[in-house]
Image 1 (tube, each protein chain N blue to C red):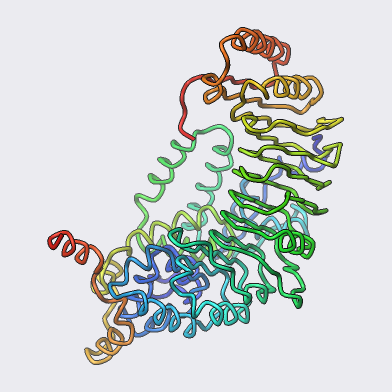
Image 2: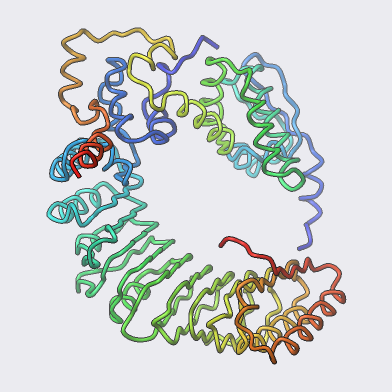
Length: 176
Length: 345
């Protein structure tokens, strides 16, 4: 499939992104295209000019660009296994605030693969944890009175019960 | 940017991106974490009542039905997807649940009955889910399509696994799905032959149709076709101008495509063949290798085939393989692989 010349040219362009503190980030076209929102924005206005992203900080933008830049290159050249290893390294030093800022940023910029990665990480951290443990992990104050908490547990009793099936199976085995 | 934490995530984002990745039971338990979230799980856009859910409830099956009932009625957002396994254990409620979620504008529906019982008839209410873009049914019977059915006008993807279809049902459904692009028919049965006619279908997978002898395909926009374990396939649309991805198991396939042109094939894979079909395989393969300039990959898996060749066929077979390898040598741009060893399928 022959590429049309304008598309080829555009690929060498840099895209200018103006973030919250008015700093300009210049990213390669291919990297910017990882964001559906930028893709749509640029298809209307072209690559001249600057796209404003007022609600994203430079720290977060740097992380987003780091991820997108790696994945643009990794797409055809690096094995899936190695990409996964890189992803885990990428996540390693991120504190909670950064994680959640990234969720908001990827939501706004519509970057599915990064959003999936971060959200899956958060989900993995809260899986199999009790309410109290979740509060501890995320430093959340318990603002429920004991009565309120009791009411909630009672209303959805089934969700707060321990797994029952394995116990039942044990009993059957003993009897048989 | 201020210090943001899990607490600050908008409810909808929390639900759609995080709570949907943990089991439903745990998402409901989230309601005890903080006052802000005591009802957040009712905004889950995806409801999955899978085996995991049924196993996580320590009470008996009747209670499961009540719990599901309650959860469905407490949903206060439009449902994106709904998945329910063990439909036969909830037979009395499933009709009203489907009606309820059809009002909620559900897009993806996945229903599975347990395998233990005979196929249950699919609920008529399913035909009221007009907003479906994706439908997946496992272990059901579709005998009749109600006369009032206007079609799944937005359905893009249909997946049927072990579904017993009446001739009328399949025909009507296909006809009334005006933008269907992906169709999988796996181990389904029909009293007559399968007629697959669609002007929009892009991808077709036909798997394990052992009892059916003939499948006729007339889909001019087909881009990808995967065929495994079926006896006879005739592609009526003689020219496959847009077919790019062709995978087939020639073990049972006796008569394949009678095509004039395979120009746009990019990928060709043969899962297996036997003594009777290898001749047509080789023919097809050489035609593709000579006539498809965009061809990138040819994979021929002889794993399951080699044992069933008669001793006198083996020699001819080996010579044909040699011929194939020569053809491969003539097409250096094509990634050609011939596998003999055992592989797990």
